[in-house]
Amino acid sequence: MLCRHQRQQPNGSIYWWCSVRSNKSRCPATVIQSGSDFRPGSHQHNHDSTPGAIIKLKIVSQSKQEAATNVFKPAAQIVNGAMVSHSDHTAPAGSRPNVHNLQTSTNRLREKSRPKDPTDLNFETNYDFLPENFFRKDVVVDSNRHLIFATDSQLDVLSSAKVWYMDATFKIIRKPFYQMFSIHAFLCTGEDNSQLCHRKDFEVEAKEKKI
Ligand SMILES: [Zn+2]
Image (cartoon, rainbow, N blue to C red):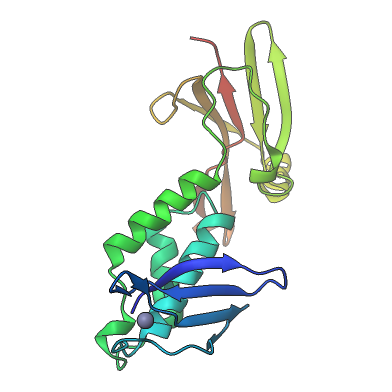
């Protein structure tokens, strides 16, 4: 059994229906999810059920929920996290979803849930999808538009650093973005004579330009 049809109820519960069909009728069995609690509904399966299906359902459910709320996290990481949370190597094979299929459906859900990529510079930034206190300024100069990003802790480090290092890259940028310009500083620990320095990368400014 793979329960994959879900309906959200007004009270927040999610009903998962068994996906098995026989003689043109759907199996009436359900699983009712309330938060992290999963319990069987009142109807039994009209076929032999697969042991371990609840574990599989928990993995699928967590992957779907995270794909809808964490739309920039890679699907592989989402599915792996759900597998680590719920999988049990002593449980029957029916408890393990097909990882490739689950990653594909998780990826599709992420794409559907996140805002469309802008095609030109005249787009409205949807701040709901940005981490809190990360976006700093939207600066327009002539026909160029610059979006500036930094976390509070990054600004703290930069404000106390003696030297800044600037870097620009064009490689990872997609149109209408033109360049990512970043400011870096060295973080140093230890005694002066055995100082260890690590370059700390900050994605401080994403510079956009009409092409
Ligand atoms: Zn069933």
